[in-house]
Figure 1 (cartoon, one colour):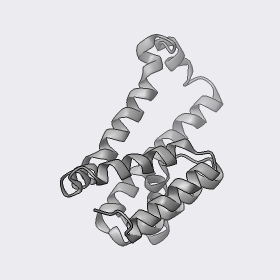
Figure 2: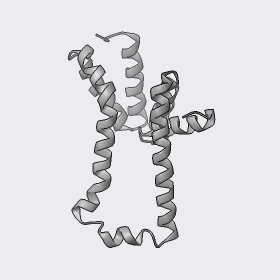
Figure 3: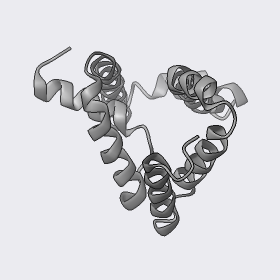
Length: 150
């Protein structure tokens, strides 16, 4: 159990950062981790570490596709996105960022030593700059470019 361990205090610090910065996503995430730590942490945390990122990407993808499924964005809108320079730029940036995220996943799995720095940077970005926690993948992708790896 992590109660009153260094892990507990680090998570508590992140929760406080979330509250100070009014970032409820960060605070709620920490509270969820606190609760999970009391329910068979040796079983739950390995599962969370292995599958939560994939589940999060799945949920994010569902959210992105929901306007198409609901009819708010139709086939004509999608076709028209190829006719305006702003939309084409958006498509190109989307492709680039997706590619970066893929590089980031690869780097994080092959060089776990960089994960800690990326996570701390992401937490700080979420807490102080109203960021969202997709940062580690993109940051790892950028880092892989800087390091010339993967």
